[in-house]
Image 1 (cartoon, rainbow, N blue to C red):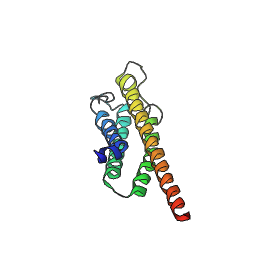
Image 2 (image 1 turned 30 degrees about the horizontal axis):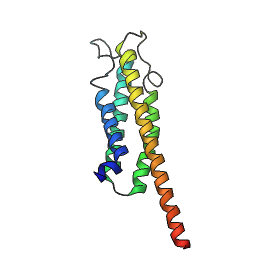
Image 3 (image 1 turned 90 degrees about the vertical axis):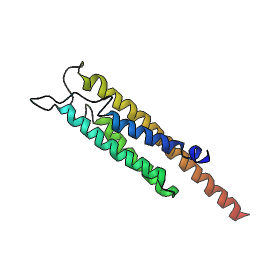
Image 4 (image 1 turned 90 degrees about the horizontal axis):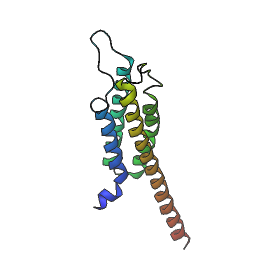
Length: 146
């Protein structure tokens, strides 16, 4: 129970990374590949899946590694990838022109919502870890002065 309580953010990050990775090509996938050509939204889907896989590996590593400073570093390194994921559908990669297409009506909002929740979890994890480390260092200074 103590392990779960101390790693709640890491577990949430891993679950959200898996949702982003698996969901990007299953539940909220972009438009299907046509017989004649591949639409640009398919490449957006591939980019989101790839970045999601990278985030999954980072979240799993942060969960398994014991060193707190390394874990914090891995968590901080997730921030640029999360920013990139947010801008992939519709900004970095163009999507279909019609708003009724699957890539605009399902893929883009789902990716951005999961990514935003993931971003909030990462920022909360960073803040909690910095506050905890700050309290530990403040206690060490008090003991050393006494």
